[in-house]
Image 1 (tube, rainbow, N blue to C red):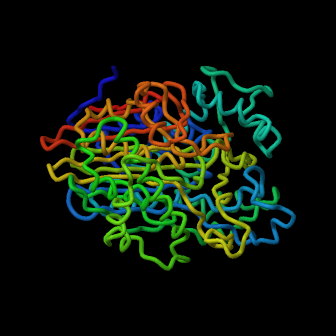
Image 2: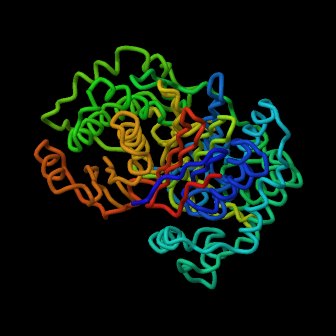
Image 3: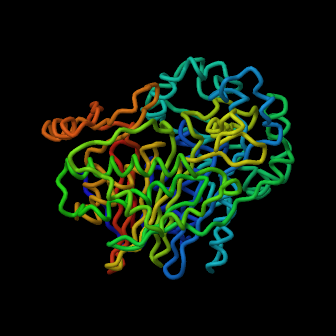
Amino acid sequence: MIQSNIAPLGMAVAPHHLASESALAILRDGGNAIEAMVAAAATIAVVYPHMNGLGGDGFWLIVPPQGDPIAIDASGAAGSLAVPGFYQGEATIPHRGPKAALTVAGTVSGWAEALAISAELGGTPTPVSRLLADAIRYAADGIPVTQSQASATASKYHELANQPGFAPTFLPDGEVPGAGSRFTQPDLANTLSLLTEDGLESFYRGPLASKLASEMSRLGMPVTLEDLNNHRAKRRTPLRIQHEYGEVYNMTPPTQGLVSLAILGITDRLKMAEADETQTVHRIVEATKLAFSLRDRYITDPLHMREEMQTLLDSDVLADMAAKIDDQQAAPWGTGKGPGDTVWMGVMDSSGLAVSFIQSIYHEFGSGVVLPDTGITWQNRGAAFSLDPDHLLALVPGKQPFHTLNPAAARLNDGRTLVYGSMGGDGQPQTQAAIFTRHVVQGMPLQQCVSAPRWLLGRTWGQASDSLKLESRFSDETFAQLRALGHEVEALPDYSEAVGHAGAIVRHTNGMLEGAWDPRSNGSAAGF
């Protein structure tokens, strides 16, 4: 059984151990949790390139020792050339290729905004060159390919091999790199070095931005230099609910943070502390169906929304939904949004500053387009738009797409602080609910609740089935009881990436920091 790590001065959790160690190195040098997270974000972009990168988006949830949490929306909008006519002849927006790479990449702007918040909180700033040093070295000198990257490359080879820039970057010698082989990204190392020399803002306003825009134009992407120039990360007031066990926070639209909070708000009314394994899964799954209905009805770019999401969470809506859940029968439901490859990471420092963070390029390898001479794989988050002009998610230039990404945090009534989250599209809110319920409500040890078997209501990659999928480590009795309740149940492998890479950190009332990482990933919980 994997044990959680507990340390007094700092803790970092990431789905790749090198990212955890990059964060820990900054903490050891006297940097704070925000600076450590920037270092981890840069490293994870290099060592987990199939799941995230500089060409993607990011979301931050920063919980200071005192005062209100701060959220950062570092997601990009549709390019000014991404008009419906750009997709003439297409039934939907493609998931791969230059036409899929239609939104500005926001994640680097989030690093810059987070460092601005860090400076406002006081202390001596750590130079960006130090924060990105590990990432540059790993990109230049090479990393061992993970099994996750090797499997993703092999399974998506036919979709990606002919996309611009993909083969020279990710298929060395024309072959899928094997797990454990050395993988270098010299162009990405150069790009990261430019960011240390010219500043993070140069990604959007500077020589690097001009270079990116020139290559995007040449490849036929609908994002322009003006689009990059106009992009800024946005500070947000996080959504929150008052739960029986404390105050829980999550991200605002265009993310599905509402869903994660709604599930906890609904199940808070269902006596989860007394629930057995089958009841726990059933009630959270039923709450998920109801929360997804809110998501699909309301969530889009906040500038295009009519409803205030916090008002929904503060109203009687969740109580009414809880009353609809039948403990004896699964409700029918429609379909999910599908999976998404992402990284969640958490950092806490000795002052009590805590960060919950997500970074993503959406599908494995995003659009598959790697901008020449930059090493940057551009995301395909814009595939979430609809070409139906009357749809809630209708494509409009300058509009933010819907995001499944949502980092979570909580201040518990007993004085503990918790940051937690997961990758995995539709699975993110479900995994968050599993972790919070098992640990906070039911008292399961932190590492055990992250390692324990999980489930996914919805689709996994390459599947049309929206069934309830359970890891095979659940007991036969649980499988049978859920089927008897009317769930369409399928079995996943014992430890499946389909249920995401999760993690969590708790700051205990004595100041000790406890971190838990996901054995489904290549991660670690690193503390000192």
